[in-house]
Image (cartoon, rainbow, N blue to C red; front, top):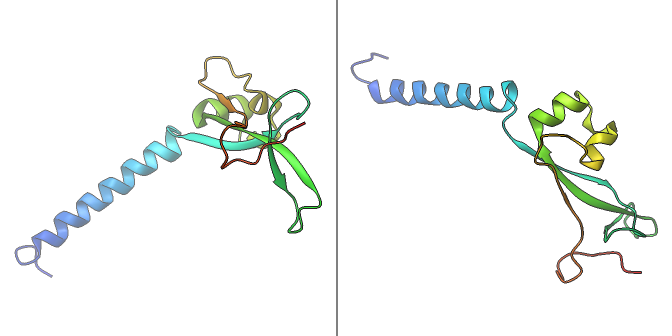
Length: 114
């Protein structure tokens, strides 16, 4: 392949490599993204989502959603954020952590009702 005859291919290849490098830098180096995960929820205190542990839904659990910045979460909890109580309670100072509870008015969600 000669550059003069296939210059379009080389230009696309350069842009593809730049895009891959920029994505790697953003997601792996500076952790510039948000994470959404489930956390345990107490149905006696809050309005919680209901999830099934098996296909027959004999055993169920209560949860809410927690959304946080990946960089702040990594700084506070390390690599294993699922075992970090600070991440579940949204007790991270200086972060824009958000806990989402179940909305009983939204019919698409299955909420626990007492």
